[in-house]
Amino acid sequence: MSDPDKQHTDANVSVVDVQKHYELEGETIRAVDGVSMSAAAGEFVAVMGPSGSGKTTLLHLIGGLDVPDRGRIEIAGRAINEMTDAERTVFRRRQVGVVFQAYNLFPNLTALENVMLPYLVDGKAADSTRQRATEMLGRVNLDKRLSHRPALMSGGEQQRVAIARALMLDPVLLLADEPTGNLDPTSSRDVWRLMRNLCVEFDTTVIMVTHEAVAAAQADRVLMIRGGQIVGNVETQGGGDEALVASRYAQLVE
Ligand SMILES: Nc1ncnc2c1ncn2[C@@H]1O[C@H](COP(=O)(O)OP(=O)(O)OP(=O)(O)O)[C@@H](O)[C@H]1O
Ligand SMILES: [Mg+2]
Image 1: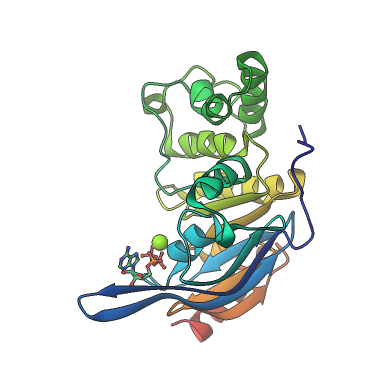
Image 2: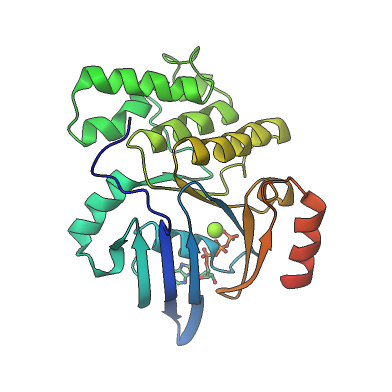
């Protein structure tokens, strides 16, 4: 499963003084305003903050989906802010798995085909791809849904297909932007339990944006964001202490 090209290092994610401002109708929007953070391989970090506080912008910067105005972002020892657009696109596709609130599956493809896509794009052989995709769907407890199309699956099942797809290339970083935003509580719980287990099993850093204290409490720590800045770092050690997260959120952010 491990690719010798990959380096899962200690400071797997390193963000130093990153800024992204937008100019809109003469007003400066400080979407991300001097953020520094780091995360180890196998660490599960949750990000919480009010709407418009810069969570999605920060996630996009860390994943190389967007470029900062200022600052340094290293993923597995590579400074993605110094890459050309073409280099960053290749790096991101191979090293960063992304899961969004909307599952973004192709409706005309089966679960298995949806999961196989990143490998096919990466030019890997079809037989080993099929085998790995089947393994990944087993890992998210969907071994009985290989030939289902998205319309025949529940939201939780679709999101687990998206997670399996994000893990296909053994990414050093898995980013999830409100992955449980459309799910009922039981399906949500399945998803964050998976996130927590997979980051250890795959030695991947998981960064998950969420509005739910119960989900954030599953992470090793929770970064609280307000006005584009990190205003708190709450250690939860994955202990599920929802009340602690909710009260710290209220103190720091509200
Ligand atoms: N392309 C853009 N141009 C101008 N402003 C933008 C752009 N993208 C984001 N913003 C602004 O930057 C700020 C941060 O947006 P962002 O999407 O990161 O927030 P968020 O914390 O993810 O919010 P939510 O919880 O609602 O998803 C907001 O004020 C938003 O309006
Ligand atoms: Mg957002």
